[in-house]
Image 1 (spheres, rainbow, N blue to C red):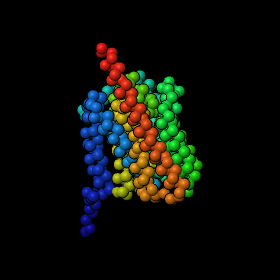
Image 2: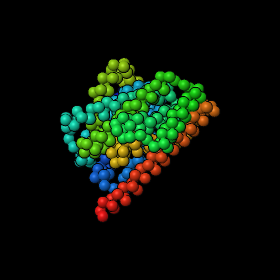
Image 3: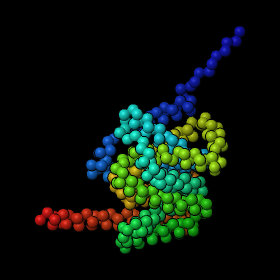
Length: 356
């Protein structure tokens, strides 16, 4: 008589390995989120650490998202998963005592609703652009964010930029134009999505700086409100755009691929890390510092983008434009550093004169 046996679940199956991987990364994230927010506000070293952490996370996230979208083209569903993972992790961390984030307040949620809308619009358009734009050109276009921040600052009463800042921004824009002329893989839709993403990124950076200062919210609390408020909006979009239920069907079909699950889980976790470091950098430093860090990390990402994830067809115009764009970004960062340093040096004599 033939005995019926139930097949054993392998410890090395894609599901078990991916769960172990997610468990490890989740515990690491709980450690990061448990760092006291008061330290981030009082330590001078935290400003540098926040900027470095955001630069590294931002650079890594571009390549991870590109890798996921090469196998899973439903960008809005991916963004929904990232925001859902963020909300759940912070909620669980708060209940387990890992974080000191305050409970949800509806009055605060209403004030932060525009922030959530601008953030999700930025990420949604950025993910859509990555489908058709290669990484070096995507980064070059995103370097236009400082130009948009300067324009927004001028109209909000921050005054005109210095000559060095203005010239460096013009150099950045010229580099984008030249590089686009030599881009063999030019995609009008992808370029349009990237430019729209720049506008929304500018808006939410300004709002993050304002919200953190006015409402006294920590970076973790802003991140929780942002992800929580995003979910209804994103779920509506994936239904309207027709991604659902096809996106779930493809996800189940690819769930048996270990490599895909690892990239997807890494994308979800890095989405949380990127949000946390971005909000922390903006609150501890400023919106302008966050954009400068984004420009500097783009130099490394542009170089790597020529060789990774499909690479780029090399053309004299394309390479020249990207070099000019990168040079403008470095010049811009140096000009802003000098401007900030000169202001700090002027404040010291004024303070000493006031004491006398």
